[in-house]
Amino acid sequence: MNIIETHDLTKYYGKSKGIEDVNITVKQGEIYGFIGPNGAGKSTTIRTLLGLIFPTRGSAKIFGKDCIEKGHEVRRSIGYLPSEIFYYDRMKVRDLLNYSASFFEGDYTNRINELSEAMELDLNRKIEDLSYGNKKKVGIVQGLLHKPKLIMLDEPTGGLDPLMQKQFFNLIREENRQGATIFFSSHILSEVQQLCHRVAIIKDGSIIQVEDITTLQKNNYKKIMIKGENLSKRPFDLKGITNLTLDNNTLKFFFVGDINQVKEKLQPYKIEDLLIEDPTLEEIFMHYYE
Amino acid sequence: MNIYKFEFKTYWKSFTLWSLGIIALQIIMMIFYPTMARDAQMMDLIMENYPEELLQAMGLGEHVSLATVLGYYTFVFVFVQLLIGVQSAYYGCHFLSIEEREHTADFLFAKPVTRRRILIEKYLAAFTILLLTSLVVTASTFISIELFSDGREYEIGPLILLLFTVPIFQLFFFSIGMLVTVGTKRIRSVISYALGFGFGLYVLNAFRSIVGGEFLGFFTPYYHFEPSYILMEGSIPVGRAIISISMILLAHGITYFAYLKRNIRAQ
Image (cartoon, rainbow over all chains, first blue to last red):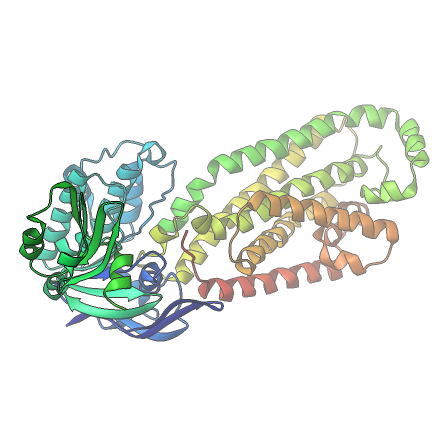
C-alpha cells in the first residue's frame, strides 16, 4: 500500500514557484528520504501534505485519502516534527505535551513519560527556559506521542548534539521497525544515507531523481583535497576524477570509484595534508546531476 | 473543545489588565463628578466659552450638561469606548494571527482538526473574553456612578441601553482586526493596528462632528453608538446600528471563507 502518493503537486506563492509537478510515492514501512538544498521546496511539499498550505494544482493522498478534503482524518495518524520549533513559550513542557495529546483519543501519559525519559527531557521546565536542542526534543516527543503510522520529519537533526542525534535515529528506527512509515526531509546527505531506504532528490521545486540508497551510495562522490610539494595534475588524470584543480600546492578533485586507485597514485609524494569528505549537496547537484 | 479551553486560558492575564484599566478609568473620572456638579453653573459657563467644534469633537453636543449624571457620564464613556475599541481590535487581529506570528502553526495545524474547528473554537474563546469585558464595563459603570453620583437622580433606562450596545461596538472592532489578518500575508505588530484603528476611527468621528454631515459616520462605530445620542435621546439610532451590524456580518463572512483557504506560511 502507498502511504503517500502525490500527483503533479504544484504550489505557487503568487508568481514565485514553491514546487512544480511533484510526483512521489512512499510505500508502507519505508524510510523515505527527501533531500535537496535549502529553498528547494522540501518544506512546501510537507506543508501542503499537512494542509497548512493549499496546492495550486495537482493532488496528494495519504493513506489513500485526499490530504486536503480529509486532512483532519489523515492527520490522526501523522506525527510531524517541523524544522524550526516554536511553542507556546509560557507553558511547561508537560502542559504542552498534554495539550498535544488532547487532540487524540486515548490516554498518552505513559507514552509521554517513556519518550521523555528516552530523550532525557525534563517535563517540569518552562518551554521558554529550554535550549534549542531541548525544544527540539519537545518537538520529537510531541510528534511521536500518539504512535503515528506516518512520521514526517522536516530537517529534524539541527541543534541536536551527535549523541542525541544517534539516540533520535534509534528512536526513529524503532518506530519504523514497529511499522511506522517515515518521511525524512533533510539537506544533509550523510544522515539520509544512514537512515533511509529510498531517496527523492528535489531541486528548484522539482523532483529530479528517485533512487534506492544503495544506488546512490555506489555513485557516491568523494571530495578530495591533497596538500603537498611537487604535486602535479597529470598522474591524476583517471577515470572517475572530475573537476581537478591545482592551486598553491593543493590538489582538489571529486572522485567516484575504488579509492585504492587514488592511494596508489599518492605513493610517490610527500603529503602534508589529506582530506576526504562527502561533497555538499550543492556540489553533487553541480557535478553529478548536470 | 480543547482548543477553546486552551485559548481561553491564554487571555486571562491580558483580560485582567484591560479590566483593571477600564475600572480605574471610570472610577478616576467619576471622582471629579461631585465637584463638577456642585459648581454646575460655573462648569456650564466654562463650557460655553469653549469653541463649539471642540465640544462636538469630544462628543459633547450643546444639549449635554456636565452637571447631570448622564451628561457627565457621556464624557466618561467616550474614553471607555476608546479603550474597548483598541482592545477588541487587538483581540480580533491577535487570535487569528498568533499561530503565524509566534510560529506555533506547525503545532496546531498539523493536528487532526479541521480548519473550521480551529477557527470557531479560537473565535469563541476570544468572543467569550469580549463578553466578559462588557460585563466588567457594566459593573464598573454602575459601581462608579453609585459611588460618585453624590445622591443625584438619573434615568437608568438610557444607561442600560448604552451598555447594551457595548458588545456590538466590540464586535465591530473585533471584525476589523480579523479582516486585517485575513487581508494581509504576514502580521508583525498587532498592537499598532489596534491603536491605529481604535484612535483613527475616533478621530474620524471627531472630524465628522466638526464638518457636519453623516457620510463619514458610516465608517465609524463611535458614530453608530454615540454615547451623547443614546444617553440624551434615550434611544439607539436604529439606522446607524443596522449599518454597524451589517458591516460586522459582512466581515465575519469574509473572514470565515478567507481563513478556511488561507496559506499558513512558514517562518
